Length: 130
Image (cartoon, rainbow, N blue to C red; front, side):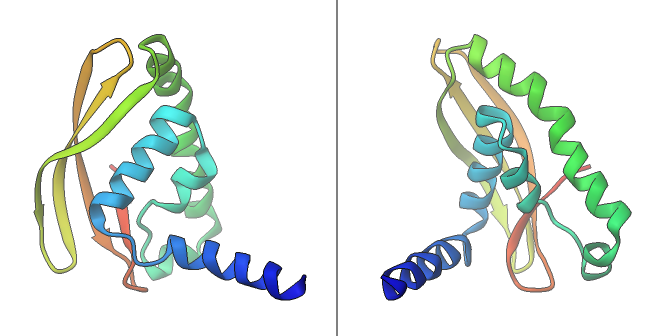
């Protein structure tokens, strides 16, 4: 039993590591905009090494997706939920990049947005927000 539990934890941990920039952006949009999962969304936001140690910055990061999520999630639900999230254009370098994201809602309407990504000091891709 203990072995199964440890294996499950390892699988969850590894599933979150090494995501491509496209996967990170899709996961962020899905978490914050479609499902209202603020905790997951905040975990996908870029912070420098010094910002990660600053409690005020951490609280700011957690509150930013929270302030966006309520409105965007309600809007998505009014539009029939998020049907698909696709990357329509991308320009990814070694440590940073930009991409265009197209969200198709259940009612057939679409919305496009720009996303920026950057690798953090641990080498993980994260979403950069303004």
